[in-house]
Image (cartoon, rainbow, N blue to C red; front, side, top):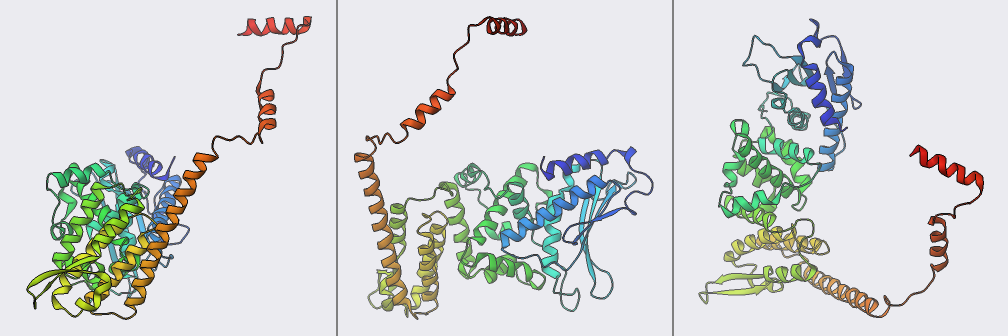
Length: 436
């Protein structure tokens, strides 16, 4: 049994009123292995289950972000009986407190009883861990505002952990795109999911998980995501502006962010993200994206340039927008390209971003190296395909007979031994038949 069902069963067991003495929860506690989580509850098994579950949740989040554990703010988890005299009291709550001076703690209060699913314990754990990352090096006050982690980030991590790193069902995205129900990213980032019904919350969680995985897949995505989380208390910008600020590959403008969001979601819905494109299909898509149409005002016409001709257009102000769109399209291609081509597509995207800002240092050398690498990969794969075809055509029909002795011995050992026909054997056989 995994820890999540174990905790659910334990919560249900503890929720029975007969199990709560008057002194519930204040005198018995457990401390987790990392010392960050302190759990208060009368039931020892429950405390141990919650302790392990909290550590597993934190470990999975740190692994996603490629971080070491460096917590500074303790998390106190209070499992208490629901107060029947206060029906409006929240089932669960997470809050950061300043205790004395710069000493802080994060409290998670869970009311046992009633609708246990409403407690959403793992989501509350995710929120507490993100709060520690936000404020561990930033004291409250002194210009530092208390800002909760964004809901899409909490839900994204929660669903990622619940699915053990798997993606959401692609049919969800296909249906939404077919019905043109993809929300603008500005609306999505500012949405409060607390009042959503079950179906709407499922969609919100699907978008949250996708956005989390998409930003992680950007160049330096993990490092940018960590910086985004740590800077949340300083964020005075709108959610879209804050996202653009911390993830430069998103294009630097709300319009480019919206286009990236739409293209990325469309790519998720129309492709198998694990198999991706073939090598040949990836090369074909890449070749098309490296042709950039730019307006040439002197001739009053649009001309298509190859990326290798960057010297002819890099100083043209009208090239910035086409280059920005090319970078977004390359990012979308990288999420579904053949695995051998992903570093290539990522390097081309980095070059396009630099050209957008007029940076051309070593661009010639990098483009030549990429072209040679692409040619080498395609040539090597052709050689492998030719060899496999030759092997299949000439070798598979021949038999070496190297394993004949082995197969003969194995067949002899697996065959039934001949039955004996003496009096004792016949008697034992009759006893066996009577016992059946």
